[in-house]
Each structure stands twice: as structure tokens, then as C-alpha cells.
Length: 147
Ligand code: RTP
Ligand code: MG
Image (cartoon, rainbow, N blue to C red; front, side):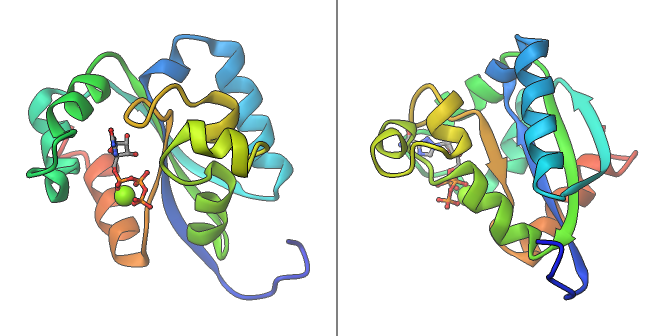
């Protein structure tokens, strides 16, 4: 919101591989981000190796969906975006909606995962869940040593 005068914060957004298959989809999502007065301060398209995806999602190592998550995230390039705006960590997570696209189509049909998400794992978007995660994830993606 333009009326929010709290300082900008940064978050990491990821457009996952299914979205990158269609450049028109990517363009429309970037337009939607800008329409919410969120600045894209850095962007990087990368095709993660299994090891890179594994490190990014290492907190989920023991979960049943970990292998298929890495399979999905390494299936093609992703577009990582550093977003800047007041309260952008929470605002971006609100814009994408929660993890499960099928539930979002019922409960929050205007969110991005309701519009574009495919399945619980192939849910098309990532958003950092805290300022600590945002700092770690932004460094992971944009540090030239890592990619
Ligand atoms: P949150 O942190 O609020 O739970 O949301 P998230 O979308 O980041 O989901 P998270 O639980 O952190 O999981 C990370 C990614 O793993 C995939 N996933 N698949 N039941 C499943 O098949 C499942 N659950 C999670 C999604 O790609 C999710 O974004
Ligand atoms: Mg998460």
C-alpha cells in the first residue's frame, strides 16, 4: 500500500519451473506484482542442480514430499525475484496463498496459487516465510559463489 510508510523489507519469490514454460504467464505475473506496488529489485533465472535444490529445501529433508519436490524444482529453470516493499514478506505470501492450490481454489480463488498452481507439490510459487529465511534464501540465490 502506498500509505504504508514502514521501511522496505526484502523477500525471495520464486516462479517455479511449470510457470517458466510459458513466457506470457511469467509476464502477466510480473505485471501483477508491479500492480501491488512491489519492486523487483533483482531477478535471476537459474536451473538448479539436485544438490542446489536439496540445499535450498534442506529443512524438508525428512518429509515425504522431499524427493518429488527436488524432482519438480530441477525439472527446468526457475525465476528467482528479490521483492522490495513495506511488509513484503507477509504480503507476498498473502498474494500467493497457502501451499495447496486445490484448497485455494475454494477458499482464496484470487490468489496466485489458485490461479496457476497444479498440485500440492507443483504449486508454482515460493515465498520466504520470515526475515531470517528471506536473508538466507536471497544470499543463497544471488551470491555469485553459489551458482
Ligand atoms: P509454508 O512454508 O507456509 O508451509 O508454505 P510453503 O509453500 O513454503 O510450503 P512448505 O511446507 O514450506 O513446503 C515447501 C514446498 O514443498 C512442496 N510441498 N509439497 N504435500 C505435498 O505434496 C507438499 N507439501 C509441500 C511445495 O512445493 C511447497 O511450496
Ligand atoms: Mg515454506
